[in-house]
Each structure stands twice: as structure tokens, then as C-alpha cells.
Image (cartoon, rainbow over all chains, first blue to last red; front, top):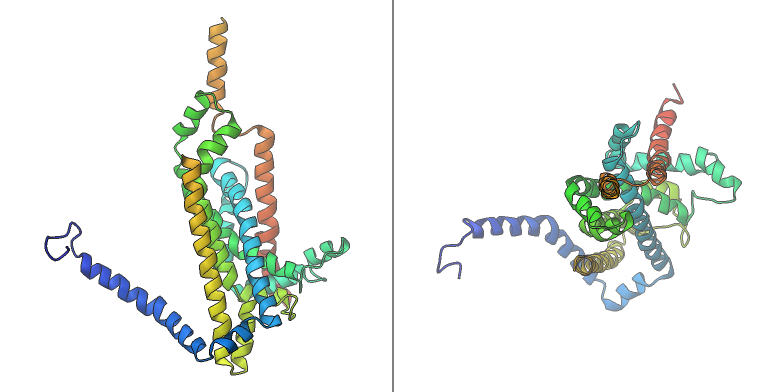
Length: 275
Length: 55
């Protein structure tokens, strides 16, 4: 069809070719190599590695903590971006600038700072120690680190959307007799829901693959506070490349499935709230 | 008289249409500030105090 009549998009084939070629070289080729290496194991061996107790525990912690952290970030990120966009208060600009700190700080530095803060001798670690909560070297520490690095993803995707909300829409809702909670629930929330989901998905994706900021505060105790990426590093250091790729493939498939699920529920929820 | 006060009330309602009750506003701002201080400012301060500990 493209050949028979001139396309409405000039240069479509060239640009599509460049996009696909670039995507192939940057994304698909390394992933294909990963699958190829993992395939050298054979199915039984691959299943054995992935379902070993230590790997399963690490995968469970990685994905569980990432989901929990992204969920908390979605809620807190909404409150923070609402406060930053809608209200005027002293220190607002400083806080707004501070949001990007987790982006800018090298993850290893963030990890060391967090473990210094939450270790039993650290400022917050001591405070939590008084109520018998240990954060460093426990799954809770993993969660804290993932909340830290995920927050800017939610806030920075929500802020522009909140800024672009037309004031007239909320005023119209109010003048038609909607209470403030009704306006929030039926007018504002549907408008920002896609961005909220995107922020959640971004924070989750980043948290699943996070390495630097987690390893120090987690302590990587096998079966307790070990996430999957350092386990992959460990296999690499033992020259078990195929084992490492097996875990990587498992992580990849799980993340892909979960992101697909998030996208799917985003579309469904948005359709439901709009109609 | 009643019509005028009704209009006034309606206008006041629309004027507040884009804002929350004062207590809720305070709660949102306080929550945001406390969270950011605990989760972002404190680690940032620790980075500097650790860096300058040795002088």
C-alpha cells in the first residue's frame, strides 16, 4: 500500500528503518545474546537454577520490595507533587529542586549514605532501634533504598500533568454542585491517572534493576536480604556465565510480564474512570 | 436578599473550588515536607557530614 500511493507521512520507511535499526542494536541485540547464552544451559538446568532456594528468595525480595516501594512512591509522590504544584509554602522551591537528588546522586553514594543513616549507629537507625525495628541488613532496608531512588519518577511524571490541569474544569465541577472530594475523585483523578500509572511503572522498573543503592544497606544476607542483581554478580565472579544469564532471563521475563500487566490495568482503569 | 446571599455563597464555593480545606492543605504540605526531609534531605546531609568528617 505504501508503494502504490504516496504516504501521508513523508520519509516513513526511512525513519521507521532508523528507529527499528537503532532499537534492534541497542535493545534487542543484547537481549537476544542474553537468551542465547541462557539457552546453552538446557531447560532442566535452567529451571533448576531459577528455582533454587537462594535464587527464588532473591527474586521474591527483588520484585516484592520493588512493587511495595513503587506503590508507596505512587501515593507519596502524588501528595508531594500536589503540594509542590498547588500550594505556596516556605522552602517550596528548595524541596522542588531536591526531588532530583536521587537521580543525580551516584547510586553507590546513595547506598552508602542510606546505610550510614539506617545502620544501628546511624541517626535514623538508632531512633528505629529504640522501637525495636531494624532497617539496615533486612528486607526493610531494601525497601527504604528503593523508595529513595523511585520517588522522582512519580513526582516528575505527575508535576507537568498537574500544572496543565485546566482550572476551569474544577471550577465547572464545583459550580455544577460537586463537592471537593467528588471533584477530586471524578474530575482530577481520571486526568492524572495515566501519569500516575506511568510513574508507578517507571519507579517499579528502576527499583527491580537497582543495584548500587541497595547492596550496602541490604548487606546481601542470602535468603534474607539478598536481591537478585548481586546474585547475578556473584555467579559472574564464579565464572558461571550461563547461571548468571539464567537468573537474568528470569528477571527479564518477570519484569516484562509485570510491566505488561501494569500497562494493561492502566488502560482498563482509565477507560473505566473516564466513562 | 436571599438570592444575593445565595449568589455570594455560590461564588465563594467556586472560589475555593481549586483548593482544599485549610487543615487538609496543612496536612498535605506537612506530609510532603516531612517525607522529603526524611527520605531525601537527611541522606544528602549524611553524604556531606561523612565526607567532611576527616576534615
